[in-house]
Image 1 (tube, one colour):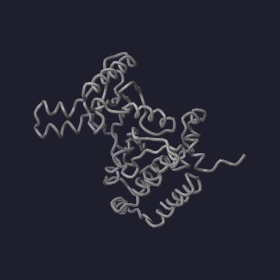
Image 2 (cartoon, rainbow, N blue to C red):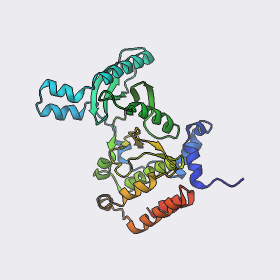
Image 3 (spheres, helix red, strand yellow):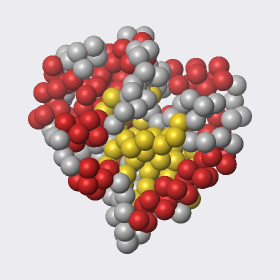
Image 4 (cartoon, rainbow, N blue to C red):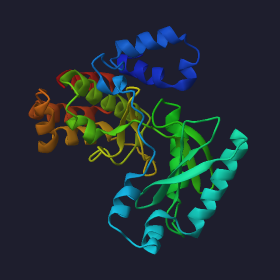
Length: 300
């Protein structure tokens, strides 16, 4: 039986079913060996300030002095989404055995997000429902399906509860979008280098499992850096299985784009664009192999 290669072992280590059999100190040691442990300088881990669950969308729209009917249009889903929200609240209240307070948090093209809090479980939960009626192949149900799958690989926010038309997962309070983290004055070169490796690690896991996230050419609003020093991918409704995985190569296109190269240079990181693009082509030709990925990481 051939020996399992270094980065294939990494994929196995990310499986929650495998980690459950290992003592925590062994998991921690392996995470450290692969570079997943955040550096001591990581400013997010030192930030104890709780992020408010107040919606920045609502604050901005209110500042525009829109009338109430317009605000309702922006902040409330149509009837199918509203019915799903009521079902989600009912299910969460049954799970927690106490009332749940919900507040509007954000609105996107396909979904409306709410935070839910209760007395005995102060940590908010994020509830996502569809925005418009009659959506084909409900994106919220797809989000639940894929979150359930990638959670098994230690990827994505933890799915708390799901049902027809709604998805409830952990609310990542104190998180920054990746683009904000990249430009944050407190983020050091070491912090940024760790962050870049972490997103490549997760993309490699997805590649090995033949899961295409389909958003890695413009991922900076789909990745959060949590104050607990976690790098979390979000928004999985566009995921598909594919015979030609492309998460790592798409991410490399983004990392070697002029805008990102400039941002990394501002933090003292030199990006070898021609070499990285060459290695990305080699990786694509070889498939998601441990050797090709190791060569790519070595050039970062």
